[in-house]
Image 1 (spheres, rainbow, N blue to C red):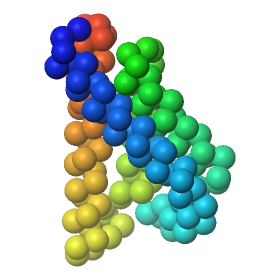
Image 2: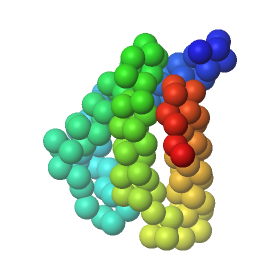
Image 3: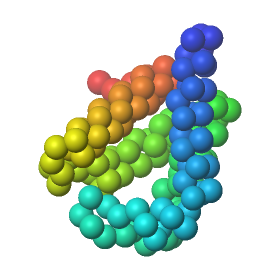
Length: 125
């Protein structure tokens, strides 16, 4: 694996590690204040599982272990979290713009994760 691939993997892994740790640090707020785009709260164990997935998979990418499983866990996290928390069709005006931006960020993260999977040897015919 080239140096640039390792740097990219560490940056993306670090992003998820930091996000997961920050979510845990503000866990009570995430569970009791932050609602989905549909106006309901996710149960605390579900939130904890998502945050743990971010931390563990982020660490795996940084360390270079279990790269493909980590990539798929993070993509699954993004596929679930994006429509739950950033459904831009539930908002209007500037609030819609903010959610549209977050959708683009999550799509970009997914693309980066797919590139990491390709670098790790995932072959799709």
